[in-house]
Image 1 (cartoon, rainbow, N blue to C red):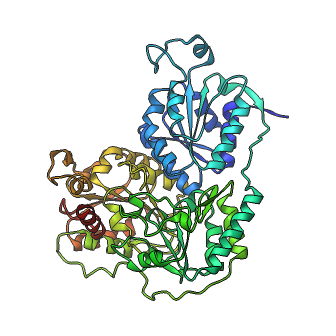
Image 2 (cartoon, rainbow, N blue to C red; image 1 turned 45 degrees about the vertical axis):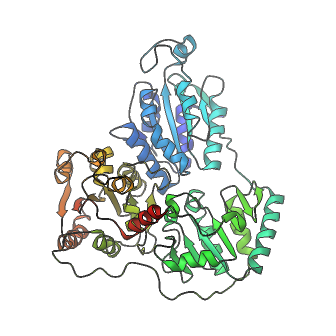
Image 3 (cartoon, rainbow, N blue to C red; image 1 turned 90 degrees about the vertical axis):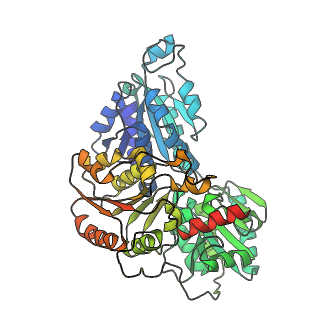
Length: 546
């Protein structure tokens, strides 16, 4: 059996999962990991401007590629990235966080060296991360091979972040190049019982309906989900986080669930259904527009990553992939009459010199989208404006609706485009969020990427203004930047534009179609500070009435 170093082995096995790009920052404790990345002909090091952004970029990469990797140095580097890893944990994004630590001799002597506390505790940061990852590992001369195999098995099985700390000297330790990763399997008895129960309920229902969401993507079962839709022919909707998992041209598609505020057909169908089949849903406040679902998922059929609940009976150790395949094989095809009108924005009005607002912005963006686009939408009011959009074929939409960390979208869009450079990337961000992570625009330019960045400047934290007692509360104001000058600070080719009216925005988007073919497009658009998408207005009205 050939031997291999610990660092080379870890990089090799991650590359087998499809990871080609490793994001992070160098630090003297992680150099040996970086050398392993550089020496592998199939992997690439991507340096970012700070560790938090690198974590967000790895998150965006994993959303597109399937898995992502972040490398930081001990203490100061890893803690800077903790919020990004926590967001990946919350939303089932499989990112491995690799931390280079001081050499074993310093750990064993509990030596006081840099990036530590005055009273050294070399396991403190791993303990902290144990709360925001699925599992942690601290490698030593006795456990390195076994721990890497174990942690990667958990990584693949759970589709969530894992954390591995590697001392500098352990990186160079020779181990057997004999991967022994464990794969997850469904419990056959539990699976058969669940399928029998589900089929009986579906076939006896008058109006069964499917509700899909983002965990379909996380557990990598889009093909199985599409097969189930095709075989059953049941009406189908999706939640906000799952936007894009169902093709808009699907004849059984009711459109995105927008509560009782918009697309009332989807809301009424879910409310009236006597058997909702929920697949991979995240039933959180923002994903259901703070009003909740009009039914209880566990009362019917709720399929999650590794368990299923049917009429409040839980069947454990069942993989989403397996139960969808079984249901596709056994379900009866059922045709249910649906409304003919497909939900979407109406065609935008003719452009004029009216001041730009949300009523024009989002319908015009809908027209701007093209098949195969990848869209990253920042948290705040932007997801509400974008939610009713009708998507072209094979469009990928990414939001961080559950964790909701402002600043996520800019580095995530960078990571997403690194994962697939052949698709057009559109970033929609507010200027308040953009301020937290705008330096990653320089990394986009450094890597010769060509995203279309649209920065909505509405003079502060508008989503917080509508939630505050007073919209003019001082803490929702932010520093004023001239965003059109920002990319000029960085080295690279970029086309910059601004738009304050409908006509200007229309012209800018038309020009961006041309410019994006050769360089990044950076667009700043302006609205009134209290300009709100219709959905935001209705949500806030409902909250205040309650």
